[in-house]
Image 1 (cartoon, rainbow, N blue to C red):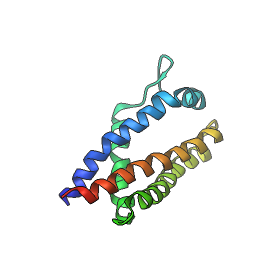
Image 2: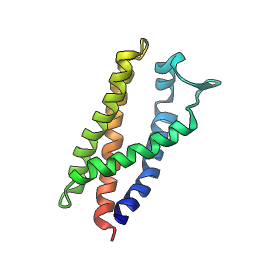
Image 3: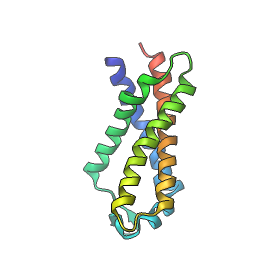
Image 4: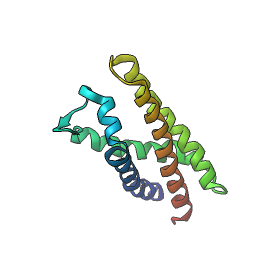
Length: 138
């Protein structure tokens, strides 16, 4: 059990870093434009609600450890991590984006599709990291 707690705690910073690079740098303008007036803002920047943001960044890596990591293979942690992490991310982000698309009038389809793919990619990377780490920790 302690091993899983360590994997979880070490996965959080990687998830945060990757998502910060994606949302805050690489695709910041894309999301700012796509969210338009739906986004909380501070000037031109998107300003998420802090407590909700903290929960998101705690829950997604927790889901990776609880749902994707147990499906990975010790013999092939990278390949199985990519597969199961990607499927977990696409499912998670897909539910989020498709729910928003179904109930919010101005939720952009293009942004939803990009976000779903990003969810698969980030969760695949973090699941690979978690699988390798899980195999190496005592």
